[in-house]
Image (cartoon, rainbow, N blue to C red; front, side, top):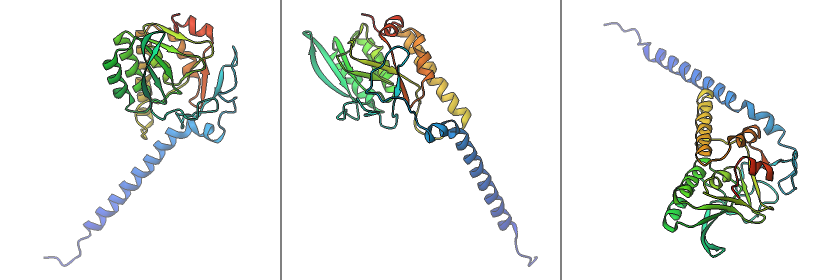
Length: 249
């Protein structure tokens, strides 16, 4: 038997270290590819006017802080709930459900349960936005029970909230209310390889397009939605709301 030392363990360890280093470099490259498009906006955030300033045709885009869904800018009630709250109310003598607050992940199942239990004639909304998938779930349920949707005076419906609003069999917005759209992220907040991240966004957008088509909303609304960055919000004009069938009355 040879007395020479066994060098295989050292070689194996070197190979494993090399593989680990290569994987870390690849992971770093993928993360860089993923976040590179957002770096300019992180270094130079939107300089647009704040949400509390009025809009007019041609001047409809305002700054929006997506990292704080319950209060993305001035003009939002500082006491806005961080999750969507449901309250039974009466509107014009009709049973209604008021939905108010940011749309947090998981709110969909809870609000759907309330909608199915109460089956209100009308759903009123006051939300600065949040989870797209939960908004779509709520909107489909509103349509399923045959409820109308409404934005009352001075209320807001931004980001993902318009998808809930679109679920109404009839949809009405007060003159002083604001409905706004922008780009969305889809799925969980995880780091994905670039090609998977693109696929995730494409699947999400396809789902939104199919939903809006089912709800009878003109898909032209997705023009400003897809062109407006996440840190900005595009407030629709009364003409756009009517022409694109966002409102029905």
